[in-house]
Length: 325
Image: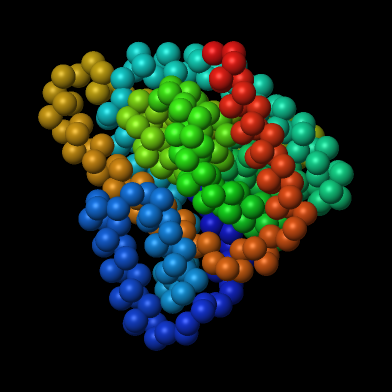
């Protein structure tokens, strides 16, 4: 589901040059620490950042695929800890905010891109990543607009930088403002880009926040399809195939089994525990792909667009949740 910027994999800069065997040993040891279950997803992200920038990631070529598979399996596993009725209630609450925030973000992104004189395709990818579900949206929209590697990489770089910040920033703000579980779950589902960081932040905040955030975020991800269709018309490209997030259907099935099949209770707690470990490993791998060169490759203007869009959607969503729900 998440996609690492390909441009990053071509740069071998690290602060310390070490033997490849030593790199592999350090990386595997840190990975085992994440699998142990003794550290939280945010800490795992930091460990990944340290590994990537201090000694290097010897398995960088496999990062994107591993993140994609692990995140999808983790989300499906979390479905075994959720109730259908609660999910429907959360989905209804978040529907209006989802629709309003997606289209307002896309429109604002269009104007910001023109104002900052950013390449049209790069600007649109950043807007879609902010509006819907981060790297997944960029991966789906990129072939529709036929963006090149540089344009896609810059957009992904912006999203991953901001996601890393969000994972630490949002829970701190939530506690500072004394947000309820429901308020925080809805807020982070709308205002944090990628599913991995949404689930990581919500899981840190509480079980109810996790359920609401995951449900609303995955419902939001389905908007990739209409946005991709509209994008194809705007960019006059009718030949590209749209990537549909089919794993969401398996997540829904997991919720149904957990709600209506009593026997599921025998294995559900174990599946949820494995899912949370999978999420921790996913965030470690995301951190392990965020090398120092990300900032260099992104550039100031795309990052400014990403920050402004993110600030607008985060502040607007928070105020709406606090005063209109």
